[in-house]
Amino acid sequence: MLEISVADYEAMRAHGEETYPHECCGILLGRTDVAAGNNEVTRIVRAGNTRTDSAHNRYHIAPEELIAAQREGREAGLDIVGFYHSHPDHPAQWSATDFAEAHWYGCSYVITAVEGGRAAATNSFRLTGADEETKGFKGEEIAIDVLGADGEVTGVLEMEGKTR
Ligand SMILES: [Zn+2]
Figure 1 (cartoon, rainbow, N blue to C red):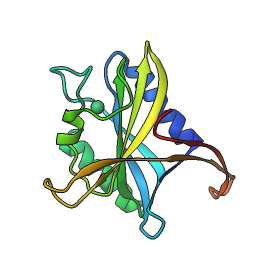
Figure 2: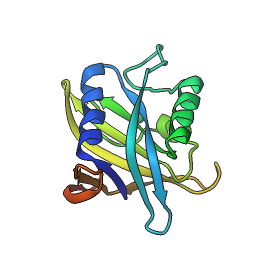
Figure 3: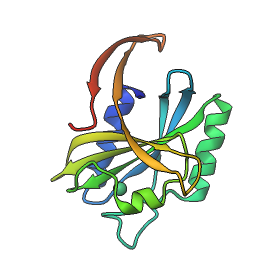
């Protein structure tokens, strides 16, 4: 399961609306609860889409942006737990390119469909396996948390299945 606050969830979706008709992309920082099998997002970092050849159906996070996000996370005691990007006028399902370019095992890959400039479905896929031979994408639920003033989870607003 992917756990994310309402604010981060909405910010991720808004990013896709802003960059429409191009893709947006970004990095999810947080912690992995290995026992529960959850990736908990506590911060999102926007990345520029450096793919200029066909930014409407491909995304790419520049290595320096990845390193900067890793450093920002480390200083706050956070890891990279996932990535997000948008699919302008395409379903929130991973593409062959998305799969080929996914290499962070255990991370959540979140895709938001943006239809006519409006964010529609958002789905998350966990990259399973340990190498190129065994890797796979597995749909996972997204728990959208309501946070209290102290940052503790006070409730779950909504639980998204992978078919919405
Ligand atoms: Zn994609």
